Image 1 (tube, protein in one colour):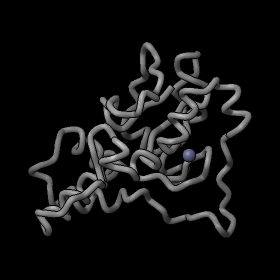
Image 2 (cartoon, rainbow, N blue to C red):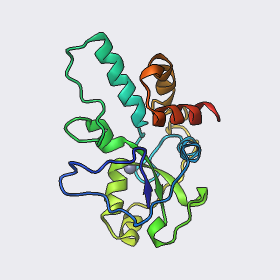
Image 3 (cartoon, rainbow, N blue to C red):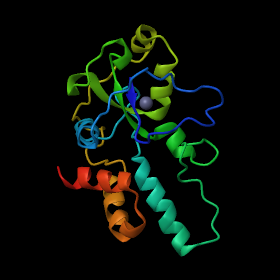
Length: 181
Ligand SMILES: [Zn+2]
């Protein structure tokens, strides 16, 4: 039903853990980046702009490199609300409109960008009820919708190049997916 950016994101959701499908699809990073870009980095349920989580990690590292004593809450592994409130609400995920666990295909037509808040809400609500309340919205190019928002993904690319030696394999793979398209 969902394909989070991080493999493990379980702790500290106040008991409201996202329901996990028995078998989760393994969406490639390239596919996820295509979905985010197609949707202009906007949650298709609430139209809030989403944030690319690895960018927040590198942004935190950057600020700490300049202000080592700073107390920051830009990023945490589990997207904890206390340690990364922006990601707790707006962290970008790719969501299956028709849940993967219910046979929904992992095809672009069934995949949308979602903010973490909508993703968790949908996960804990009957699909039909959620979709009635929050039908996926079409992104229109009319005046008023951001055309240039990128979820901080360009910031990620720039900071990755500065922190390449400290990057994880996962971050390298995100970098390559962002650069390869
Ligand atoms: Zn949303």
